[in-house]
Amino acid sequence: MLAGLGLLYWFPMRRWFRHWGSSDTDRHRPMRADADIIDATYETTLAVTVAARPEHIWPWLVQIGNERGGLYSYDWLDRMFGFLNGPSADRILPEFQSIRVGDVIPVGRGAGFPVKAIDPYRTLVLGGATDDLQWTWEFGLYPIGERHTRVVSRNRAHVPRTLSLILFMAALEPAAFVMTRRMLLGLKRRAQRLAAEDPDIGSHAA
Image (cartoon, rainbow, N blue to C red; front, side, top):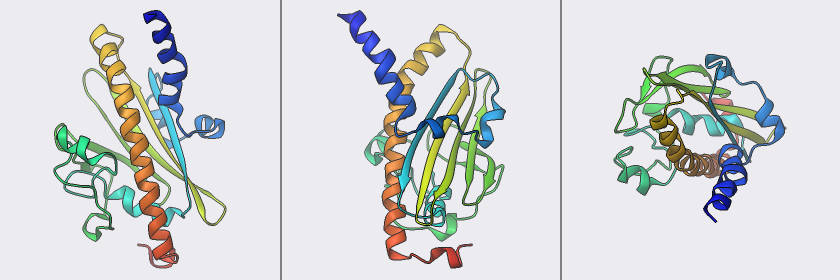
C-alpha cells in the first residue's frame, strides 16, 4: 500500500508539480538563466496563458516582494510563514516599478531574492548561491498574437545529494508548486483586469 502511494506520488504527482500548465514547447524552450546552472539536479517549468500583453503583466512582476507588491499567492500562508507582512497589492505601485540587476527583493524571513538579469517586458531572473546550493528562478513573457502572453516560470537548482538536502527538497517541492501555481494565477487575474481597464497601457509604459 505504502509502496503504491509512493509510486503514485513519484510519477504522476511529481510530474504535475514540476510541469503544471506547461507544454512541450515551454519545457524545451531555452531560457536566459539555463546556462547559469549547467549541472542542475532540480528543475520545474510552470506556465499559464494570460489574455493580456506583456505591458500589462510586467508592472505586477517587478513590484513583487515583502513591503512591495506581495507575491500574489496565498497571502494567509505567506503571512503565516513570515514571507509577507501584509496582503498582496491589487494595484500598480509606481514607487516599486524601478528594478535593477543587483537589487535584492525582500521576502520577509531569509535573505531575499537577488536580481540577476532583466530584459523589460520579457525576462526577470532571480537567483543566488550558498555553500550548499545554487538556484535560479526565471519568469519569461512570450507574446501569442497581439492580445495574449505565455508566462513561464522556471526554477533550476544544483543541490548536493546529501540525505538532509534530499529530504528538504522532497518537502519543498509540493509547497513550492502550490505557491508558484497560485502566484501565476494571481498575476493572470491582475494583468487581465489591467488589460480591460487600460488596453492602451503599452503606449505610455515606462
